[in-house]
Amino acid sequence: MIILRVDLKSPAPVYRQIVDAVRILLVNGDLSPGDALPPVRRLALDLGVHFNTVAEAYRTLEEEGWLEIGRRSGARVVSRTVENRCDPQTGEAFERRLREMVAEVQARGLPRDRIARELRLLAKTLERS
Image (cartoon, rainbow, N blue to C red; front, top):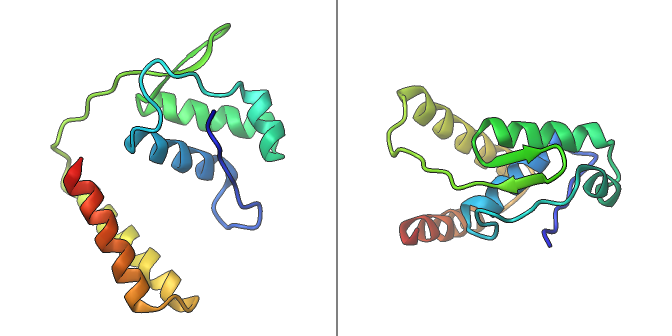
């Protein structure tokens, strides 16, 4: 069973929070090909959101190639291969988003040493993958 949390006060749309949370589970290997995700209505009830919000998140993940959505079988994780090549805009967007996120948490008072520690831990995790 997957556990997701959303922040209804966040400026990020709830469907985007769901997409990001599930994508993290997928990339980290917490969800594997063949695993079923909770039914849309069940997850919507658990999160306290409208079922269309969850359905939109699942559709987004399907478009990205992470899920297969069947009428009766629900959403299942599929095997996905990703080429290690991307266009320059993807790298630039990544750098921009990372810098924006660091600036945001700094502005909220998170100490620089904590930010650096978290980034190092993330880098180590990526190197092991």
